[in-house]
Image 1 (cartoon, rainbow, N blue to C red):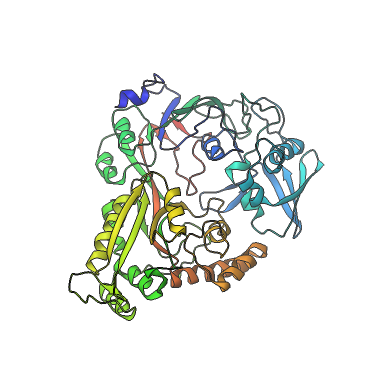
Image 2: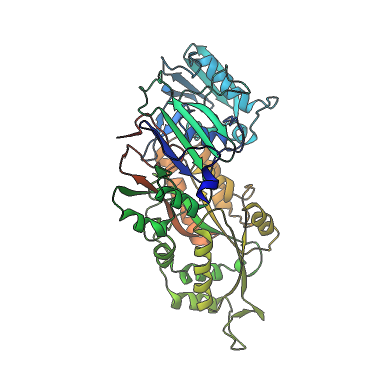
Length: 503
């Protein structure tokens, strides 16, 4: 099996200044233009492209290609660029080049127009003030604008980029892509942050977590990301290997169909919260290293998290009381509750791309069964069919794993999931107070005031349960001891750096 995975490249061990890293996802095209689809994530991870702003390891916003910035008005930002930065074709990164790079993404006539980023940034004009200064004007006040400029899709590339080459500003140059198999990057000696320590990195795409684990154990990978949690402790006992795990922005949660069906009753939703033993799930599915029980939709690693919220405790007695308040009873003594004469039967769906979802859902099924709630499980290959079925009311609980703050700001997840008109509001949920707060959060520039707004939004979500939080996921990587300066970033957007090396 491993030979099949790697025979295409012929690479079985990395050289003295090279690394081979196995990861589950990667580009499906030979030229991953960051403007298209998820390509920006891949070029960002690979150290090929960089953005105007970056999230540090505490998830705080920091300048990256930017030297300084200021708000001129509620609609305008002035951004000064760092000097001395060169693209991979050795041309200078200046204001004109940056304007070209971003305009190509937001211009509806462009071949690489990205509707998502166009809506995210909401840019009206980009003006070049001088060689290293730009003024961005938005259509509406947007307190999230600078955070949105950390989106990997806004990765800056040079005007010399074409159908065959992408010229970014990062520590590594894109050498070759074998679609769905690997990315190969090599050192950019003129990198503005200093000469990278590695000459070359192979980013292997190994979707199956077991295959990725076996490849690591066989020495075919120097690093294996998204490592199976239940194998982590066993691997860590091996000499010369270490397991690295840190909390990330990724949330494991159920979308809850609140518009109709049995979960339209808030007592039933609350009962399910108390019927779920989250710690058992974390211990069993994540081996105690892959995550922690959650309360808010935002993890503690995120500065915007409402830390006053405490996870729902496992309390079967309280769950039973709430179910009784909802009118549930087992009238025929078959062990399954009925409401209004109908069995309390819930359709639980998830998808197979995330290894921990299916076993987590199976544990929830067992825990709900103890409360007299019947369930039907279904696992699809991808998440999109589940979402379509849920909009129709065919799915009651939809288990997903999302990065809830890809730009480090709470607005993205709140506005895209919980507002009444949100594109990902699969729940049929509507709360006028939340809608008003979300709209206010977008235009409130004072960070302390914004924090109060999003704290209240998190309270509403916690109380009304349009989603049910299970746990916040940690990223787990297996790394050989000779690999130095490997760090996991909470946003999962950054991987290769100039300091990454091997001894």
